[in-house]
Image 1: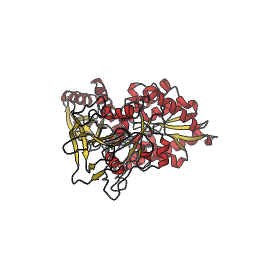
Image 2: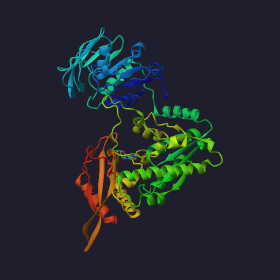
Image 3: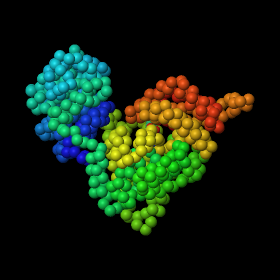
Image 4: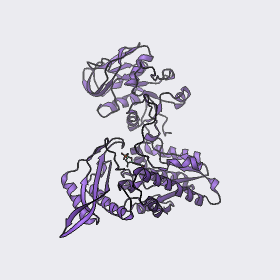
Length: 524
Ligand code: XMP
């Protein structure tokens, strides 16, 4: 799906950073999609790529199972860029030679530009030294016919190669990561100068073509949309409403585990910005009742997930009324990173479950509904841009991620209404101070956690015996890894004084300085 006919196909060979290739290409205004390396020839042909990028990957071309690029890649007559493992494939599959090497090198390096090339045009010149993020295991030892070396390092004599006539390029380094500072410009040279793309992919165009697609898929039927208050589900609702008007039924289930003022903000967004009806189900008493006495984190998550589905199903029956057959679609805010399947060359098995995430993903199978997933092709920052296109206020589109199980996983141990209220107040003060200090955008996620520990304190002349509250703030790009945020002490003192002074029930503050790994972002 794209508003432009210019599409770049990225064949994924399992690199950790393949998603970044897609992002860089899209940032340059060209639509790109990642597909597993082993999609069929027909799919490759049908994609209609202006150019193909072969990603890096953990395999060695010498292993017993070493994934190959289909021959159809070389028959389409489009430019090809091979990155890292992709470069080795170009060499091996087009008649060069790649030899095993005993060690793998990964890290910053300086390449020397050996030849001017279309790939380097306007960015790097012959004779210059430039910083790249290098990665090489196997070594290219002979080039296929028609290729020449365009950049080298002492340990990687084939750091970049080119067949300018065929428009095939290979780089041993990773242009998609920030540690290759001019990497984005090299990718732009590949897509714009070499493949001839104009770079006219825009979010406004995406929105228009996605609305056409939604209309074609849904026809005159009805679509259900579960709204959580988060960015993704709100953007889905807004987009569907613009495309389908009152064929969209939005249900907001208030679990009672939301942040302070959140249900009201959701109501306001739908009323004032989208001008669309919202079915607001206050199920907080049910959730709290079922969570009473439960302190195991996984049990909490399961209870919340199951209760959510149960209530949603009941609501659907009610709104379906006499014509349930009219509701055939369920909208979901699935994002591109959830869609891309990463390929495990080693174990072939799914990775261990650290936490069972809760979203509405369990619904469709049981409910026999087809899915409408208009964000499937977008990254999180692109969803935010789409939200802005839809006129959503910045305070809404720029919000930090919030987990499905809500405050339940920020109250280790047993959950009570009293604890929820204490946490909501502390969290609101913390976020207000972060916003006032202009730090909100720098931080990926910030929140307060109410610990199941009481400590003794003294306020005025009186003894207190109240809860301990932990503050958490992390920087991250995707939530997979994270660093704790380094606040200055004045900020932490101010927040701490305000929370202890203003929130009854908390008399001690701590700041969490654990990164991920070894910690996780949430406490449960
Ligand atoms: P962890 O705690 O696993 O969190 O480091 C990584 C990111 O995921 C969010 N998170 C969730 N999101 N349902 C969600 O929709 C969940 O069950 C869930 N658990 C964690 C978390 O807030 C962080 O952004």
